[in-house]
Image (cartoon, rainbow, N blue to C red; front, side, top):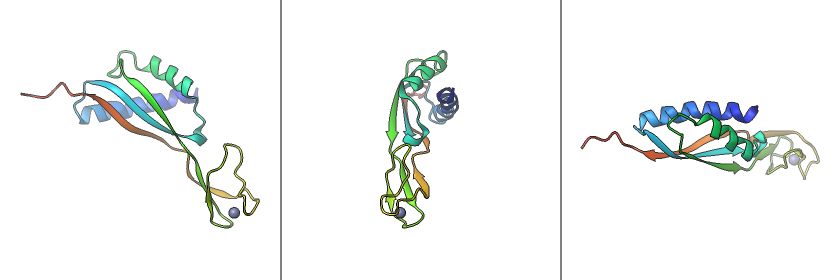
Length: 119
Ligand SMILES: [Zn+2]
């Protein structure tokens, strides 16, 4: 399952971020997923729910932000937002594009409590 592997690698990043920031308990995780990755939010949530058990994310909420795609037509150099299965440039009528955005999975924010502060 594609979503599960995304969540597992995301978890590794979260643990690193938490260590750097001395966060012991995560409340919220914000993940931006490019629309071209075609992740299913419900499946992501389920994967997160199973992976987060017994981790610092145990009580965390996963916020999924879907980022739109952007492509560049190699022919006329115009940029446009394609549909998932339609990369045809409206000007040239050709599907000859570079993908600029839409393929990324980005950990945008990790919000939590830092309980390791010394007073
Ligand atoms: Zn074009």
